[in-house]
Image (cartoon, rainbow, N blue to C red; front, side, top):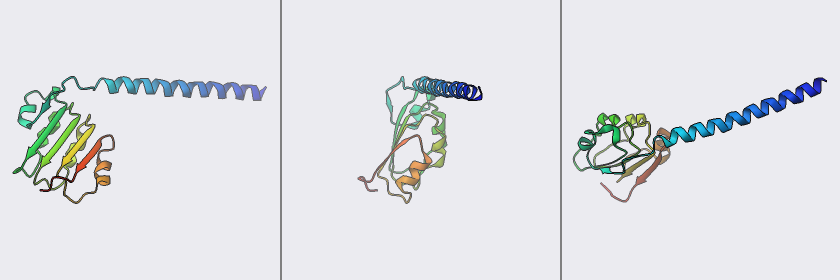
Length: 136
């Protein structure tokens, strides 16, 4: 009798865990799809992007004179792709980790000291590309 009860509860628990995993997967998929970009336009300046910050998904920043990146970029809540070619940038700004939907980070002309692995650890849910081919 005890063995039958144990087997029943074990099947019940297994069914519950399987249902929970399936529900979690469906919920995750639904929430992820809500953040798919509706605006495929590429923006080339932060100033232009900040005019409509909630609609920006792709931003390419290029600068030969600027040595830092403004924290104003955090206003772009839906930013998914960020391409940086900032000649005198000394390190990857840690505030970029606060961009909630960033899926791709490209650093062009990368030459500072942090390794790709250490940068990837900063952005665990983001694909990081370091392009060494454009020396500064």
